[in-house]
Length: 180
Image (cartoon, rainbow, N blue to C red; front, side, top):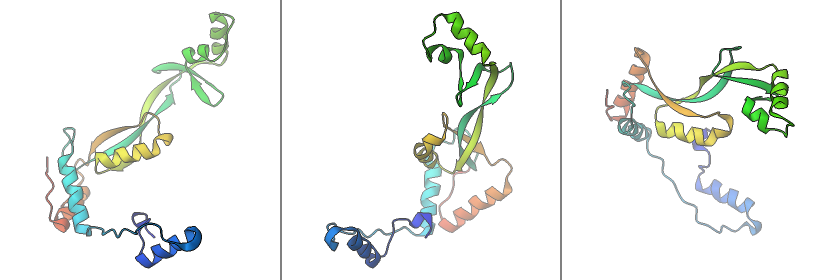
């Protein structure tokens, strides 16, 4: 079964699942029949959503990248100085607050003993989407795997293959993309 078909069953199969799941085999709720729009209508709906969203001044065709921040070691010239301890990175302020120190000097000396180094932030693409809505849903569902996630719009600049794909989607669905 494909992922987009998950949870969709023929009526007889749905009734059998319900019978085997309920005590007594009684169907206590109505089974709702859901009609999927045709593939051309699904694509037309996608194109209408693309046309309605904020393209953030980026030319068509474009896409949304979901990005996650990661800290990269850059010795002593980074955005901030940290120490690696107990499986995570600590700033001096976090280090000072992590324990009861007898003096600020003791905390600083202990932090220095951990060999501080510089790090800088880099944004790593995690996934790409044609709509911001889909990107936001992905971020909500996967926030536990992402660090300070954000969406970033990128252009398929001079990418004749992606332009051909979008033109084919237009032809297939009958819906026209607004080319900006």
